[in-house]
Length: 118
Length: 113
Image (cartoon, rainbow over all chains, first blue to last red; front, side, top):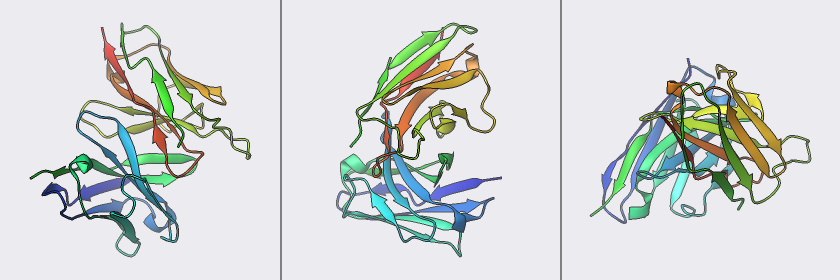
């Protein structure tokens, strides 16, 4: 069955960095687009970044552009989100999700919590 | 960016009764390919979101047929024909036509009376 498992979250000071990982299994990872979506505590969903199956096409939300970098390693069935210059407003649960027409975000991981605080 | 506006933001429904959630987009979600890129997700308490409906009205695999989606252009509706206790959570609509970004509605919290 499809499984997505995020890791790498934690407490970081403003201005710090963190790298999130998402391990995929149960499907041919290299065939699928992927996205990161976040949810601030008690708030709604915010799409963060997208990467195509080959990694050749990447999109970011304006709120993270220039600070976050999405990448993938199809040989390791893994998706990554490098987060730099973190701000308090980046505090959220970060989900990785499979993103493929016609079913964007048909499978989600359990999420990993990132807390940015001094 | 397209703004998605959901109403109501919360509703309380008696089991067995219907429920309806509205979602309006600031631009048409009808693509030149003839498809309309509107989706519905449910986030149950303590869980990750799950896909319910894609392209306005198609139920995703395993979604009960008491869930239905309708609408066109900029106005969309999610209906639950007979609410069950397991339907509690927050419902989100999302647009996927003008990318980036994907944008979600604010969410509608469904509670059971």
